[in-house]
Amino acid sequence: MAEYLNIEGGAFKRGPPSGQKRPNIWAGMLAEFFGSLLFVLVAAGAGAIQPSLSHPDSVLFALANGFGLMAAIWISASIPGSGQINPVVTITLWIYSFFEPEPKRFWWFTTGWGTLYYPLLWIFAQFVGAIVAALLLLAIFGGGSDLGRPLVGPGFEWGRAFGFEIIGTTIILGVHLYFIWGYGRISHEKWEKKGLKLTAIPVGLTHLVLSAIGAFISSASFNWWRHFGPTVISNTWNADGDPSRNVDWIWYVGPIGGAAVALGSFWLVLFLYKRIVEPRVDLSTNSNNNQKIYVRKQMNRKSKSKSKSKSQEYVDDSDDEVDEHADNLF
Image 1 (cartoon, rainbow, N blue to C red):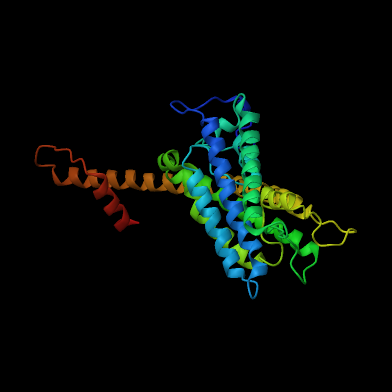
Image 2 (image 1 turned 90 degrees about the vertical axis):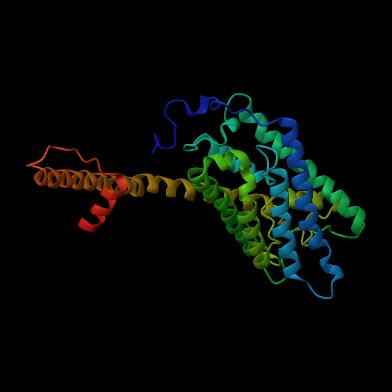
């Protein structure tokens, strides 16, 4: 397993692949700032407007969260290395990058000064974007609003909200990890051109579905700054009103738990894939090659037997013809 995770041979000291450059820090921070601002503004705004409606609207909330995140990722990922929006996603990809299988797509996260600077600066930019978004919401809804900060839904205990934050974060990060790994194996060239922009649609739609389910359970946050920005600007800490049970920690510890589950399950699946699936694929490939060799020999023997009375002429069949005969024979 250590060999597959690339722990041996200096994974922590590897340099950039040939021809690749580090993402620009200032452009990347600006992209993360605007991405976080857009998402928090739209998602928290959909929550802040709920008291003004005749009845709570989970469809509006889900659409705002899903498409808001989709747009934020798509726009910010136009800058190479950006498009993470969520500090938990940044930390998860940072950990993933240390053991990333080939081809390397996040090498800049784990080489030299980038090991610390990139994740910290990306997270800081996301934080500032969330604060600015909350200030804009304050200007729109006024001081009497909670600015759409996440809450435990009516009729639900904090434990259920905490559990939903863990489950939702696990699913969101799982989509990130499996899509990045799988798509990188299929088309690394397209990844080099579009990067995390390719995750915008699957991650956004996943968040939309989770928001429709959890709108009135935990507000489907899955993002530290989605809670922190509106809460600190509206000064509505412990908004449940019971000083004996401050549950604000749910929206910080929950995503951490989800990240741990997502990374653990992801590496377990990759380990099993390496040990079980890939060897069978290799055996199947070798078997097909052996069949082609056998068929080619049989065809050459028949050709020789037919030309005994004539001058020997070598027939070099194409691979397509060999495949056709192999299919008929086997």
